[in-house]
Amino acid sequence: MNIRKGLHIQWNKEVYKIIDFLHVKPGKGYAFVRTKLKNLVTGHILENNFSAKHKLKEVKVKSNFYWYLYKEKDFFYFMNEINYDQIQIEEKLIKNIEFLKEGMRITIFFHIKNEKEKTFLFLKMPSTVILKVKHTEIVKKGDTINNTNKIAVLETGTRLLVPSFIDIGELVKINTEHRSYIERIKK
Image (cartoon, rainbow, N blue to C red; front, top):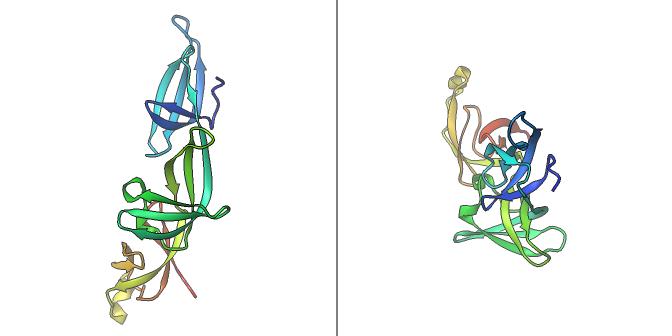
């Protein structure tokens, strides 16, 4: 197999993406390939050396856009935006769900085993989302000068640190990766 950047492989029963590699031919010993791999599910990056003779198993990874429909018990339900197929994903398999809002468009990645069999790998949230503040402390007029932060409860039930000038009912833009406030959105 031709090792290249962007190749998806199965190794130690997990799916990785090769993000960097280097063929090494030392003066003594056998040639090997030094790789930097990213685990598609956890996001962890690790370095590993494969002997030149090692056979890597290439895997097919496919992504589709889905709309988040609703949550029922421990399952989240999504609908494919092209063919309207619905899938359910167990809550424990999803990361960053605290910013997931009904009607939100997200990307879901699958490991394609054959024409009829695919397994859920991970769900990619948008890098930013806009959510409404459902509850927060009321701050007196003069107290906003100190530029302090306070806790706000968003429409998804998530608690987040926001500037003291944010009021109930306002829309805020959130960075989903860092779980942080970006800015207030004017209607």
